[in-house]
Structure formats: C-alpha cells, structure tokens
Image (tube, rainbow, N blue to C red; front, side, top):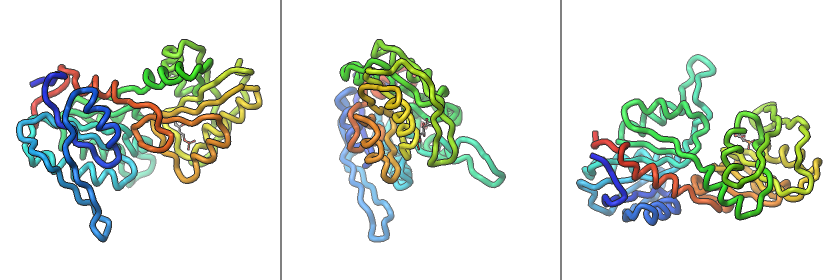
Length: 300
Ligand code: R5P
C-alpha cells in the first residue's frame, strides 16, 4: 500500500505539537482527530482519541521533549494501534535524546536508541526533522525512516528578513549554514567553537567579513544559549550591524531566551518545539515526507 496526497489521512496531534499538526492538516488535507490529554492527580498522563480510525491512514505528531511528552507519545501510539488503522506514520519533529547517541561508560543506555525502539515497535513509518545525530535514523531498521531538513524554510524566512551572511557557530554544522545561505543567496561561513562543558563554550576569534552586515547565526539546537551568545559577542566585536539567531529546535533551557535576547537583535525558531520564538513552520517538508508514496508500507 502507498499513500498519496489524495488518500484520506487523520492527524493525531499530541500536546507538544498541536500547531504543527494543524499546519500539516492544511498541507496534506487530512482531518485533525479530537485528542484529549489530561493529567491524573498524581501527574500521570491520560490520553483518549475521540475518533474512529479503523482502516484509516493515521499520522501521529508529537515532539519527544520534555520527558513527559515521550510518555504521552507512547500512550498515543498505543491508543492509535488499538483503533485498527491501516497505517501509522509517526512524526517526531524534535527527537529528544539524540545527543545521547553513544555509550560513553559501561552500564549506560544508548538513550536515543531506546526511544527509536519504542517508536518503531508501534509505527509503520517514521519522520523527524534535523535530528542532531543522523545515525539515529539507522536504528529504525524495520520501517522506513526519514530525517527531513528545515534549512529551506529557514532560508526563505531569512531571505525575507534581508540577511546578508549566514554563519554556523562551528565547523561541524557549516554544511547546514551553506544550505540555508544557498536559499538566501548570500555568503556562508563558520565560527570556531570549543565546548568547555555542558554549559560553557569558548568561541575563538575568527576574522569574518561581517562589519556593517545583517548576519544570521544558524544552529540545529539552542539549549542553554551559550553557543549563540559567544558567537554573537564575536560578531559584535567585528561590527556586525544586526545579529539574528535562528535554530530548528528551540529547547531554551532555563533563562536562555532572555540571555539570547540581550545578546542578539532577533531570536527565531521553527515549530518543532512550540515556544514564543517560533516563527517558521516545518510543515511543507514534513508534509512532503508523509505523502512520499514510495515510502509507506502496510501496518505491521
Ligand atoms: C551542538 O553540537 C549543537 O549543534 C548546538 O550548538 C548545541 O546543542 C547548542 O547548545 P547550547 O545552546 O547549550 O550552547
């Protein structure tokens, strides 16, 4: 069996991804299922889907962060499966735990793999966005799995903002900055970052042609904001006219947003994690992956 945009689809949006679920239903023409999510007095999660899904193609959308969202995703998938759909596509816009993709010490789990195994056991197809460690996709070894990129949508947004230069905060993500810059039609470069510990980074001085220009720093994740704040300090020293921080996944741990707003002129993120800085939707790319006819198998 394969899906096309013409097949009817039901979108089950979890509480972390309601906005994106709505955008997806518009993009692919699917209906939104009525999903009830609440908490018991002891804070355990309750979910109920108020729709009949028998024989339907169902898309479950739920970001896997923070931890409570992972439990909700697990419960949604269990409820969906028991309603006998024809297929279940799971979209996890932000794949939490992707930075724990290796075992560093004996006795540790490979956390990202644990999450992948849970999702795979309940899904026929898997889609995520700008996953931090692309190796995560390899753990989906029994179902089609796809990592789609937000770079085109970020590029279109920055082009409308008149950005003149796109920077990656480290060399490792330079390819991403280049992809964004290609859409903006401007130059891309990278800064030189050294991580001291989980909360502290150093940014080595690097001469960039940023003086008097509107510069965007693009990263996959902003967590504590330390990386972007240091990058912004370098750019200020070099006379950048305006600094825009953009990420796919705005985790924004503790007081990251005020720190970033003090350091940059603008801060934006996509709707993989819905928050006050969300200005870009990844729906077009995710919709394309959902309706990719070649990729959808029969329910297991
Ligand atoms: C690192 O490899 C990532 O691409 C981000 O640069 C990092 O997760 C950002 O973390 P923070 O905001 O805590 O500096």
